Image: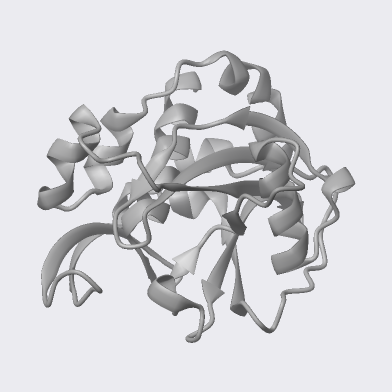
Length: 220
């Protein structure tokens, strides 16, 4: 484990850095391209995708304490949830007409998917949006914090498994890897990924998490 991972793993330490995270300029594409496949890098840099017909979605990067350590809530999607089935993801989903704003979407979807009440989550910061070509979603991530330990109630319709990830695992560079995958748009493609507790995290989720990682590194 590197020194950054050791330093940030305590939840009280993480909380002390929230004001700096709030003020920090986001690395955006600089962080995203590090976890993108080669065929996606150019479109990320110049945002060369057609915005007509895009659907907006929002996800929550939820940090919470567990035995005084900082944890991040991830989910393994069910096999029947469409294009992104059986993938590791952040809780979240598409914008609905009743949502006041994108943060409301992230809070609502987090409650629906993993059972955490919106009033328990303090939304800290909006992170940079990521376009997902296969589903034509434009995803807006938010960093949220719960101040007390959580008991999750995952939706059996959408979530196959909760993944409670120590934040130190995300910060640890030894968990970076490259994998060859079969996707909905390519028979075989090599992509950068995180290997987190035996789960391969790639694509948009990896890009979003890497922006969180790079932002934390900047404020330390």
